Image (cartoon, rainbow, N blue to C red; front, side, top):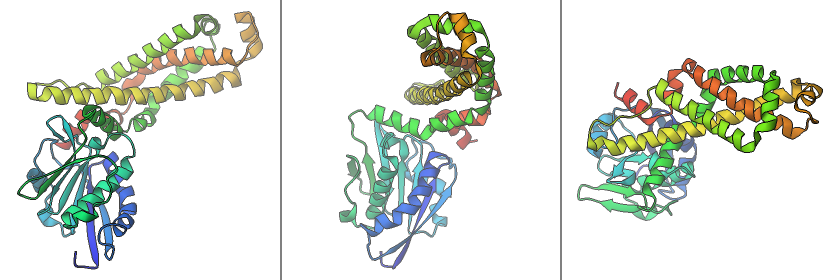
Length: 342
């Protein structure tokens, strides 16, 4: 570029793409100075919006939806959480040189080192649009590059384990840890149930006699119950209406189940720790010892909190209808996609 100062606009879907874009705006200028146009200064700005764009839309449709004619920036990079694909192969980026646009699909990068991979790919987008292909830099991951006669460039993920890569990227975009933090009402209901359960001698005796295998079964049952209840209560299951939608529904549902599983496991672990501290702090060891017939040790409290956490999680599943619908649906692709076009 001829000017000493160049501008880049980062457009981002809400959620994970927006968070990545904010961090990228701080690190990209220095990365570009070290590779592309070292004599230039780079001004990077961020705009967050849920654009009505489908995952199968062509680049020309994306250009129209973003209304690039109204933008004055030298380069526009759109970060989306939509899983764009070429057949079954994840698309990492689409670049339109004439439109000075790069579309980066976050899920196509998998679930690891996302910030570094996005920064590396954004640098590649700038190099392609700037016609400085020699300055693309070493990519963070293996990619296949294709280009057609209209200067439309596409970067594809490696074909090996492509569906697993896409699934892990979708789960990352769902941010399951935010789901766990957002289930505050369920946590409070489950904790209240657990505190009451800790006071019952029957729980002390059961936890002492059930053993790890039965306690593990209780934990699995409680986790599955909460996941199923969240799916049913918040209508998170995708039902395909045609053969074309079947594969997409399978992918969406798989990402939903994995996301909810991670979120519920984090939730359950937090509940277990809270109940363990409560049991250690409030229950007299002598009283427990009289009921179970032997001295109370650390393992006694661990087993007690383990059982009560499972029972309390089941209670939380019944109370999860109190949870904010938006907090749960924000962690699933189908709900976000419907909201995008609403």
